[in-house]
Structures are given as C-alpha cells and as structure tokens.
Amino acid sequence: MIKIADYCIRCGLCIDLHPELFEYDFEKDEIILKPEAFKEERLDEMKSMAKDCAVAAIVITKTEGENN
Amino acid sequence: MRIKNVNVAIFGSGLAGLTAAVTLLEKGVKAVAVFEKRPFQGGAVSNTPMCTMAVKNDRKYQDKAFKEHCRFTSFDANMETARAWIMNSWRIPGFIKRLGLDFEMEVETLLEEIGNNDAYTGGFPFGMNLGDYYILKARGKGHGAALICLRAAQKIRKLGGEIIFNTALQELLTDEHGVTGAIVKEKSGETYQVNANDVIIATGGLGNAAKEMIKEETGYINTDRELTGGGNHYCNSFVNDQMTGDGLKAAWKIGAEKTKIMGSGRHIAYPGVVNYVPWIVKNQISTIMEQPYLIVNSYGERFIDEGENRRSANMAAAMRNQPGRIAYLIFDEDTMKHLETEGTEYFYMIFPATIIENGKEQFREMIEKYGSKQVFMEDSLEALAKKAGIDKTGLLETVDRYNQLCDNGYDEDFGKESKYLRPVKNASFYCIRLCNCTYSMIGGINVNKKGQVLDKTHRPIEHLYAAGDCAAGCIYGSSTPNVTSVSSISYTQGMICADSIAFEQERSAGK
Ligand SMILES: Cc1cc2nc3c(=O)[nH]c(=O)nc-3n(C[C@H](O)[C@H](O)[C@H](O)COP(=O)(O)OP(=O)(O)OC[C@H]3O[C@@H](n4cnc5c(N)ncnc54)[C@H](O)[C@@H]3O)c2cc1C
Ligand code: SF4
Picture 1 (cartoon, each protein chain N blue to C red):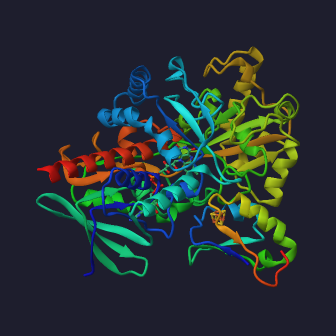
Picture 2 (picture 1 turned 90 degrees about the horizontal axis):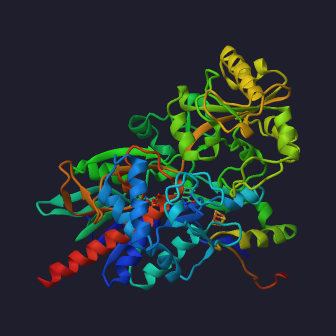
Picture 3 (picture 1 turned 60 degrees about the horizontal axis):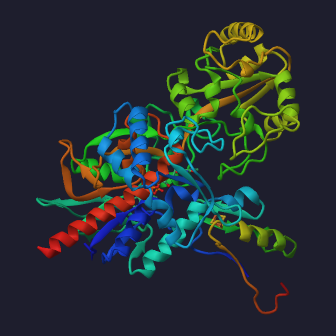
C-alpha cells in the first residue's frame, strides 16, 4: 500500500522530481498520488522518492497478497 | 463563543514558533499551545533552508560580529535587539542537536573574517560573514530544516504541549494589563476565543498572496516566475499563499509600532525547470546567472560592478534602484565557449558547476521546450534587445563602451576586476533576465531584547512577544537582509521570547 502521511509538509520536492507520480491538490491543500504511482513498474521510483522525502511522508507498506 | 484556556499561545509553527515552544517546555512551562494556519508544521522551511548561522559564545567574536552588524545597517536598526540575537545565537547548534539531529558541514568564520562580504566563505553569495555556518543534515534530497521542524513538533507533543493545525490568529484581545489572548479562526470558518497569559506572534513574513500589502509596504509588484503583468518580484516560498500578514495586522491593530518590511535580498532568474524546490535545478543556467558579465537595466545601461553578481543581497539592493527593478545579464558566444572550456568565474555550492556543458543547447531547450520568458538567445544584439525588452539604442551604446573598456583592460566606469571584462561581440548573444526574489518579506513588528512587542512609544505591550521573520526586520533596519542569517534570527528570537516568558511567569508566581 502506498500513501502520503498527514505530516507531509507540502514542499513539492516529489512533484519536482516525479511530476508523473505526484501532484498538488490546491483545493484540499494536499499532495496526491497520481494513478501512475500505483503501477507495479513505478515501484522502484516510488521507493527512491520515499527515501528522498524530507520528512519520510511517503509510506510504502506491504499488504497481504502483495509481492513487494 | 467557544473558549480555550492556555498558558502560552504561540501563533505560527515555523522555526520561530516551534523553537519558542520547545524552549518553554524544556524550561518546565506548562500549557503551551502552538496554533498553525496550515495543516502541518514548518512554515517557510517546507521549502528549503539548508543552513543557519551562529556566532561563537566568545565575547571577542560576539563583539566583532555586533560591530560589523551595526556598520552593515549604518545603525539604522534596533541595536539592542540585534545584540540580543548575536549574543544568543550560539545556542542554536545545541538546540538542533537536542532534537537528535546533526550537521552535514560546519564552516567556521575566523575572527578576522567577520565582516567579510562573502558569507559562508565556501563560496556562498549572500551578505556578510558574521558567524559560523551550519549546513543541516537532511534526509535524501530533502531539506534539513524540515526535519528540524518535524522533530520539534514531536518533542512539543512529548513534553505535553499542543499543536493545533488549520487554526489562524485573527485578532488579539487586550485589557488594561496588556494582551489576554486572541480570536482564532478554524479552516471550517468557525471562530473561537483563546485565553492566554502570554502570546507569541511567529506568523512569518509576507508571501505572494499578500500582493497588495507588499506593493504598499515595499513598492514591489509581486508576480509569477515569468514576471507577467509587469511584475518585478517573486516570493519563493511555498507556504506563501498563507503568508498574508495576519500577525502583523493583529499586532498593529492593538497599537504595535509598524516597522519597515523588507525582502530578504536575492536576485534570481527561474530557468531551472522546477516548480517548487529552488535548489533542484535541471540545467546550469542558474550557475551562469551568477557570473560577473555585463549587466544592464531596461534602458540598456550598466549600473554596478558586475563582480557583485555573486553577492545576492548587494545585487538585490542595487536592482531596487533601477527602472522596473529588473536587470539583464548579457554575454556572447565567446563567453559561452569560455564557460564550456575554461569554466565559470564563481563556484556556488547550491548550483554547483564549474564547466558549462553545451550551454547553447541548454538555452535552446529553455526557450523552445519550456517556453521560458526569462532567457533569450538571438543572432544580433538588436533582436536580443527587442525580445528581452531592453532599450535598443541604450544597449548598443553600452555594449560599444563596454567592449572598449574590455579592450583597454580597465573598467573606468565601475572598477570591475579586469579578469571579468569579457567583450560582447560575436553571435550568438545570450541574455538572462534577473528579477528580485525573496523567500518572504521580513519585518513589520518591532521587538526589544526580551522579544516583547513595542508600541508606538517604544514601550512593551505587556504579555505580547514576537519572533522570527515577522520581527526580524527591526534587526536589519533599511539594509537588505543577509538571507543566510534569517533563520538564525528565527531560532534565536524564539528562544529569547521563551526565556523572557519563563522568567516573568516564575517571577510573578514567586510574588
Ligand atoms: C526557499 C527558502 C530558502 C531559505 N534558505 C534559508 C537558508 O539557507 N538559511 C536561512 O537562514 N534561512 C533561509 N530561509 C529563510 C528561513 O526559512 C526563514 O527565515 C524561517 O524559516 C522563518 O521562520 P519563521 O518561523 O519566522 O516563519 P515561517 O517559517 O514563515 O512560519 C510562519 C508560520 O506561521 C503560519 N501562519 C501564518 N499566518 C498565521 C496565522 N494567522 N495564524 C497561525 N499561523 C499562521 C504560517 O503558515 C507558517 O507556518 C529560506 C527560506 C525559503 C523560503
Ligand atoms: S516530498 Fe514528502 S513532504 Fe514533500 S510534498 Fe512530497 S510527500 Fe510531502
């Protein structure tokens, strides 16, 4: 499972680095994951971005039935 | 109306507000609550700050730093408050370490280097060396100060304090003894009353959303990165849509003295193809922008020794006196070749590059692929002037004169070092438009050495304190702030407010 934790500081680093995976929802004042972010072939990029996030707000966890 | 009672109410959860809260709680002060307009902590640091500055806890260093600061501001600032900052800043590294964090690098400023106009010695372009520079250790490609704020928020909760998000200061409440609390507004639109024994305003500076206020207070026309609609200034802080000067307005409304609001100086162009985080650059044009080549105003006239182009605060101040407050860096193909083969004149560690790779292609990509309105490349100076919006006759005259000076090897007009005199003769001709950018406008509230907010007669308003960007301006007066020191003021003023409140509360409890 992939999600953005509520302590995300909306710095936009993830959008600058991976605009196809992350975007800003200005209405909700939240960073959201684009559909592409959930694709298997993007997992490595998501993991790498999770390591780059200033406050570790990109949370990737294994859920039952998932291989990764 | 709903009422919430706290002991100390802090408005704003940037470095200043969080440092104040942690320091109060570390001193055993109870019922400390931080109210934050946005849904997360951190304020301006949600975007970058990567370094801070502290003067050694040594009288020789502190006295020299203070003297140099007085000289830098021409004494046109609040000297006792500046002194309090310099005398207390040594506490910052310890504060950060107590949060379990460390530094990537520490750059010492020697006694004889204090007052040098280099800042960071390691090649940073802002302001003046006052103390030691601490480059924060970050997580991944993130920014160290964001981690500091996260840890500070965790510590506040652990020590029994509260952080209340989506809740904004609206107005301050007073009685005959001073400030008694505030009215706050939740994101839902609901308001409630906060009663507090002491209040700290730490709501930061002004951002892009405060366009009208910025224009009125500073004369800048805030705009987007492409400087559309005749704009000449951009606030480069992502929190800035919430930075509408609420704390300043609330303080002024109850009689606080209004002080000058200034942009922490930085001249910049935005050719980096990024939207949010300025130091993630995807080309080398920001590095070229810092080089000491011909710079003209919109009349095509020179106005500065371009050697200053690596000292952003100086450039920003000089640009403020030019028509439209913008400027243009101009060079030719020979200089581009020089950058590609011999390398840059300056090395700047945020945008490190010594050799420019295929500069022409980088310009072409910016113009054709990204449609940049800040960089230009043409086959003639006439066409360049037209595209960039520079007066053609003025530019041609200046280039003629400048080329003569280059041939003579002496800059009679501005005294630029001769090694930087590179003629502008052969196509292609390149131009980068420079605007003034700030990380947010600082100042507006005057505070004394205890962090107390001063009224128009320079008397403290009882139980009201201020810290950080909203109060830092009084330390700089009219001079352009040194950006790299600004967070140093936020941390230190946060601590000073906490010291004063803890001391006063203990004293009145003992009575
Ligand atoms: C891109 C960038 C790079 C920078 N780099 C450096 C650097 O390298 N070194 C350095 O020293 N400094 C740097 N700075 C400056 C430094 O970040 C600031 O000086 C410092 O973070 C300001 O802290 P603050 O707490 O005073 O204000 P802020 O961080 O602005 O915090 C103010 C907080 O108050 C909140 N707020 C606003 N209105 C209200 C209200 N009505 N009620 C409640 N809350 C409210 C805001 O949402 C915000 O969270 C940089 C700034 C930026 C933007
Ligand atoms: S990098 Fe992390 S903190 Fe910054 S916006 Fe993305 S998820 Fe949020």
